Image 1 (cartoon, helix red, strand yellow):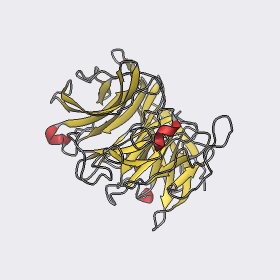
Image 2 (cartoon, rainbow, N blue to C red; image 1 turned 90 degrees about the vertical axis):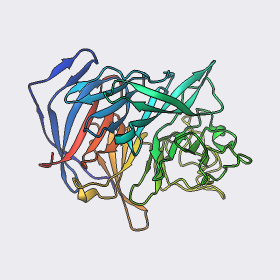
Image 3 (cartoon, one colour; image 1 turned 30 degrees about the horizontal axis):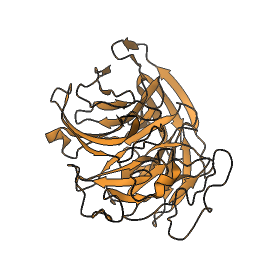
Image 4 (cartoon, rainbow, N blue to C red; image 1 turned 180 degrees about the horizontal axis):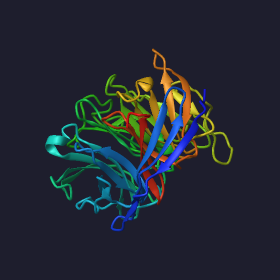
Length: 384
């Protein structure tokens, strides 16, 4: 079911100002909304962002942002930093650029982080994963090392993925789309259309289903994914979930398991943009079904799972940011893990939602999309 959302009020502080060095406008602007279970406040933390893609919360409460152009910035106390120096060369091509940032589990001590990005080699483009160490003053990224680069680069500008999820053992899961060439998602010697798994030094984990490299690329965890732009590991259950774009319909939430095939483009709940059927239908032997799907598409940009004190009403719910319908989807599951309801929040209110992240204090962060985008913070009314 889709819940109704009522916007209650908007307030804007008078002390807005422009930070010219980063072209970012900050304003004390808030809006309140009634949801099915709780009244929430949405605060604009920063606006005027240039195509941001990912946000993380640093130990001191500041925000670390990626921008597609290749910039990595910090927003702290209402001010945006200059771009952090030392980020490796990023290829800004089509949907590609500087994509996700993820903090090592021991970031407070080792200041290590991971980036996913589009890279160029000759005339070809693809997705890579990089490790680096942020300096104590936050201004530089040092000791950078490319841990992974997909094997087949092409001129295509679509479906780079790619977000990163850290497992309990510190290893990295990340997704890469089919790069606009759908049959690559079924080629076991191709990193495209896959969820991949590596250690923090780039080596192959012992749990990988094809670790010997004989039957498939050793980094492959699962295949048959069209364009996974969201990935999360539930810190309580350890469950890995992804959200990915379908074509015309067929956006999916999946729970990737080692060696499983999730069907694209053999099975799908979507159609080609021309309206032509894709593959053999919605199900076939040897291919996994999604946990949940949308038709028509909502164009999902990111996924997280809510655990926190601020919204006990939403404990364990799946949160999915959507680009097409400009909303945050809140999904409830039953004791068997099946999705039983969907509530659509903020539809059309703030623009395309590129990232969603549950902050350490239980608030929810959302990044909007585009060249005049915003960082938003969602809190329970009277708990902000």
